[in-house]
Length: 356
Image 1 (cartoon, rainbow, N blue to C red):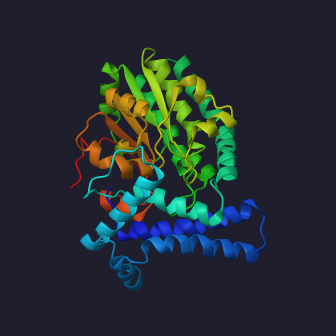
Image 2 (cartoon, rainbow, N blue to C red):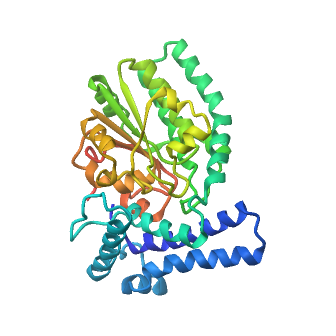
């Protein structure tokens, strides 16, 4: 998926949300809170100020069907991103002169500006810990249900379907989404909810011959539900080697190695946890550390969690039958792109379902 004007508008809304989160965390009064909000918004607005098409989109509230960046605006953003990566991450391979911009790549620049304005490298630190604890409290009952299914020798399909449904439950834990979540409500619905796509048979077929699997994590708290799927996979495919990729830097409320260590996560013992080096809210191979890139390239099967990973990886996944994506549709751009409904769950291979 490429960047659109509606994505830019969403990033502005996220800046406001982040300022609010930071204000709550430090118990600031309303005056300070408003000052922080304006700082964060001002920093992000600087990025978009020179974009003619974006200003027009905001002023006219353009239709989502008419939201592609003008070539001129795209070039301006490419220049901004090239300068940012050359200054901040000189060890990365140089970006091409003409490259597509997924929303998650621009988010790196946006959140860097926000963190500078707020003087806080991790505005979501407290909320991440709270999300992990909340998810951990819920996880235990699902883990008991999984063990019951395994002890009663339920079919591989039944066990995997249950584990995947619980795994995607964690994807409601996202403070960067347009709509907020209700974990309790989602937990009651998840086992019966229909999926817009559910490529379980294709995934099972790939697992039969796979020697290793890369699971790419997403939000803090979601990792607790990812454990359910990994427990199931280890029981069903004991020879399968499983790698769990986490973000390489603080970005919104995404899971990092530091978060897993701080919360004594069981994931550290269940899978080989890999700091991907990727600092965007979605896996971009070009931004990954050498070790993570090599594991990714050599893996037999890849499961990427969350909408950010979908936005980052969908184009590559169209040509790569190893990649399966599991997420909840949380924004209008993805809804329109997939021609599904806001709130739908998706488990699919873009290789099997090519989208123009």
